[in-house]
Length: 272
Image (cartoon, rainbow, N blue to C red; front, side, top):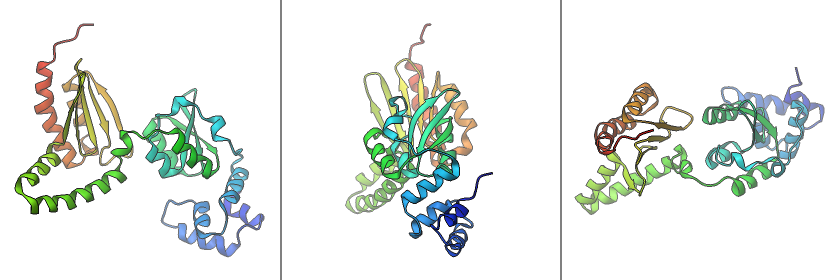
């Protein structure tokens, strides 16, 4: 078994016994890594932590630009990359995803990434400035960044303020807001109809295929599932009911029984 991070730091005179003990007391009851706490305390620098982690875990410090492959550009949304300071690099055989990380021992980050992608994460050590710069340059902003809980939380607070203004300004605008909150929005294009509400998106293609995208209130990852019919979607939603909030479940039930059922009747059968 390799040496503990605290022991390596003391051996290199980068942290004292007292500083390590203080950081360990702060760490109790949380999921923050010791190195992260010492870094925030100003005991060690980012480069010092990187070199110690490299020694502790036997990992080389990689060049993210040399390791990055465009095939993984859409695997992780930008907000998740920023949250954990990580960058997807390359997909290997046997469903393995190479991921550049500032701290490859961050189990919480690895678990979230594996849950989101359904792949096995192979951590690779890289410098924080290199990862942050690469996220801005290489990972595109997408709708998944719009529906993530952090952005949605700010949007919900703003909507509450707007509601007060609408109520003071007139009943009709307030009514429209309530309808939007309950039923969401509908976007119609040439080939599809898209319904959005409560961090969820349901798309109906002209062929009759239905897609469910978005974030369940009680799940860590995101849904991205396609169904051949409304009935198959209903079965899936019933099975996943514990993962949806009451608002999400109510909206999905209304959508399936009303809008989607009506669309299914109008869609002609497809022939293989």
